[in-house]
Image 1 (cartoon, rainbow, N blue to C red):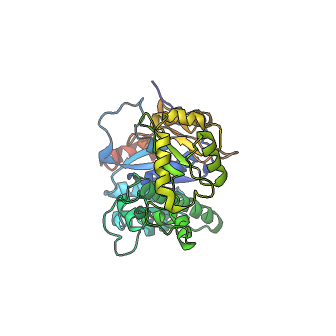
Image 2: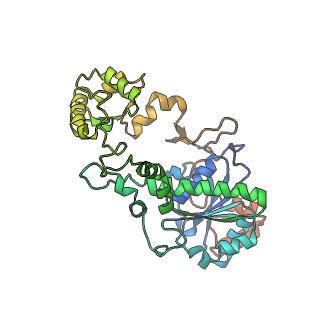
Image 3: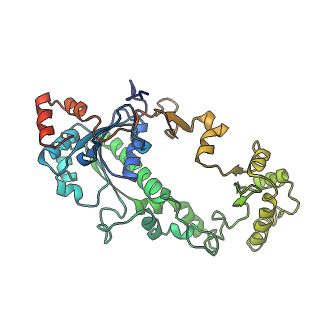
Length: 392
């Protein structure tokens, strides 16, 4: 099978932006993917030691997080490699890096060097603790950042330890998504001022911002119970996940009174707390047991079918494969197959300049010669870079 190497005309609102991404893992590549999905030209600078000795050119890299880019493999520790990256920087709008503070400075491609070379550059930096502060130089992972931000403390059932929500809150929501937002904001300002700047995106900051609404509830006295006993943390019986007769689950989110009334009507649950009683926190534990007993009387799909065309706010808990096949997600194209691989489609949707998966994920170094040629290097210069192992 021959997979598409790219698109004839990039699609999306960011087609005027060119991005240099210094290869990393997790949140920084996610930010680069979001920009690429919206049409930005993203060149990923991979390490030369990650170039496979043998690769199947008709098969894309399996990591769909790397989609939408071209790849050049560069030895950042060599003078020629550094010069190659700086040549890319000179012709780009954005640089993304996800190293610990000070690493790119030591490599000679830090913000000062890059902004001197290209004063309009937006220099996006992704770290866990941030570029400053007493913990800036230490290692960490998503679970550590959301713990220190206070966010992890609230994600638990009553009487149970906190449950890490995979690495979605720190790495991707508070990290990569915030970095992409900061980069686009700075790029828009650079178009007006002609001046670039540094975007210091820290996962601990982003994880804190994601919990702003909960802080608002706390300030209003509406989130005062211990973790697991509040409205949205599985304390309320009408905002909970329940096991069904087949061992699968449904998720109930009938918060508003009219939706709760619809849930009670559809389930025909005579023993459900009344509208007047439903907000009585003292009765929540007992009500939850009664709801749990009801949901165990039917299978997940039976409950889902019962509430499918209603405002009862009941949904089946689907696995990854089931989600991609669900009729609503199929019709919207929430999951899409590209280059033979099923994956989440670009989001959000734009009416006039929609984004798209621009090309499959590259293998490290797939486009080295192509990119060097675009920089104006002749075949002899490219050969010299290869022989010095500055590029692969």
